[in-house]
Image (cartoon, rainbow, N blue to C red; front, top):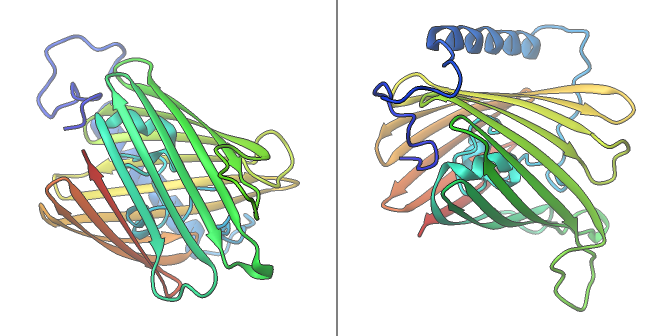
Length: 299
């Protein structure tokens, strides 16, 4: 059970709510309508300019974690794992204790390699996070390396807020860099009106981009039953012009230890599988013939 939101159980809470609960049928209707709209925008001709997928070597959350990747890189409204600090720092308050996460590209590691790792800690209403995302063996032997430091706080029974400072580290360097020479930020909000549904918003300043805000992502998740989960994100990119990216996915639990996933990451299909053993979880995902593996453990 997610401790910080533990009052959101399937049984009706005995205490009064801080604000009215969203009608579950109404939420489900909105969720389905928006998802149908996204599918139409993905597959039908549209006037909206769809940008190319953001590369994984930038300080955007795409491609971090095999579970989100297997569900089409849609995770801003769910963020219930140890990789939450990369995606939406507000989600860090969903699980008490210490969690450790590692992730990397499999097989062809001669070029365009992506690795990441993180440690998340949550106690009561406050969570802390450190993460590192590094992409190396890129074109021109470039290395993109970012350290994340995040803080999350529960504001009330249903809303959490999170902030990440992202430091780009210099390469090559003759010493370990706790911070870096350039700083950007992520600001996240997570709203969980009931145990089955959640909304997320992520506001970002991205490395190498103009303006104070370069990307805003709206995410949503809904669990239809104990086995079926649906997620989607709408990403609005802003530099000189506005463009949009759409990400949606599904997860189905075959057994308590086995999960299957499919998704669409801005028109690109993804797939994945997850295995949970005690406090360990292992996830595999594939996109564009690339394979990624992640593991996390709760201490």
